[in-house]
Image 1: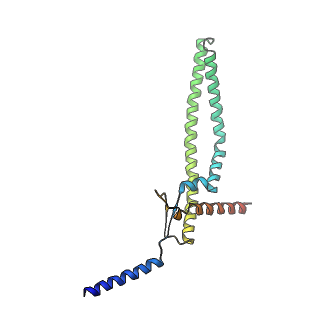
Image 2: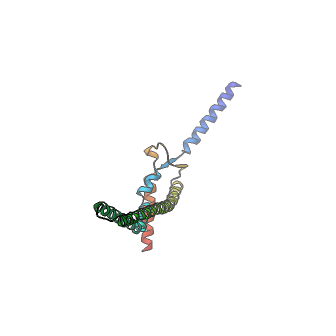
Length: 175
């Protein structure tokens, strides 16, 4: 009786081993940070944001230059200004600094918001690319953000290439 049980267990193990050999479990890993740095849609999004915010950046730089010039003038003319003129210039400089800080804070907040919006759109495209690659190449599991990834299972380059190809195709279709 024991011999029959052992033979049955051995037969089950052999059959299950053959099944696993046919259905190899395919795993892939994607470096999302690299996709967001190197893919054409990510670079286009970055340029779009730079262009969108360049005017405000120039405005802030101009105000900063004015504040520095006023501070330099106050330092240079320290003993030559009347007390009333000195107080007026100090108030003007203080108001400029407050305005500068407000503009910088709003700029950072708006910039971060727009970056997050654009990155979300690029990530959505990347996820669609990953899904298409997974279905085409019959992956069982694709991970993003792995602590360690063997270069043999890293499909980041395929995802970047897929995104770049689609971006170029869209560019040609738009022309």
